[in-house]
Image (cartoon, rainbow, N blue to C red; front, side, top):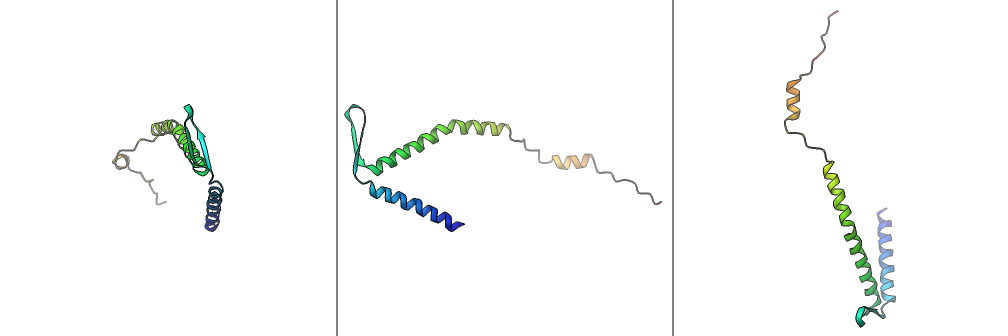
Length: 101
């Protein structure tokens, strides 16, 4: 199974590497007020991907915080360290009487 995972990873790597080699021509991104950024197309695509990942993570942060807060509220309270020993000392187990008959 591990070999299939590594083959899958290698296939993804080589396909992305081939994509980068095929897209080395210069592209431009036109910003506001006549600003322009020229770079190889693969860097522009990589930058857009990274910005999308960062935006997705930042969009999920409030939800993660809310779920952590709810999980903390529902966490069971830890028992005092001597609670088990005190319960055994207060109510010892009774054994039924055995008749010899």
